[in-house]
Length: 122
Ligand code: FES
Image (cartoon, rainbow, N blue to C red; front, top):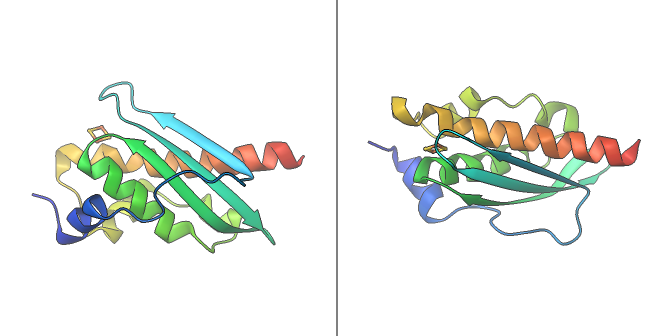
């Protein structure tokens, strides 16, 4: 059973779509279930000023991706890179045990987007 917050983010995802003016992209997929997530970030003054995502996956994958974007928006990249799957799950009021792995997508994708930004900047 999903929490009300999970259902809200699944039905009305925040920051959905694609940024055309971006500084980093992160793409991750789960080979076991086939779900995948792409994240775009815009960085200004070392902070994530804009973020968007596209996800093809289960309701929990979409909800955790949406919540991840809400958590990291406005954070310094050092802080955003520390986000964990557990933190995302807790922010949504928890996930059913078989769906705990879904929050890995968001946590991994934001780290990859930050790595991509740092690589381009270097
Ligand atoms: Fe694999 Fe949701 S079932 S990410």
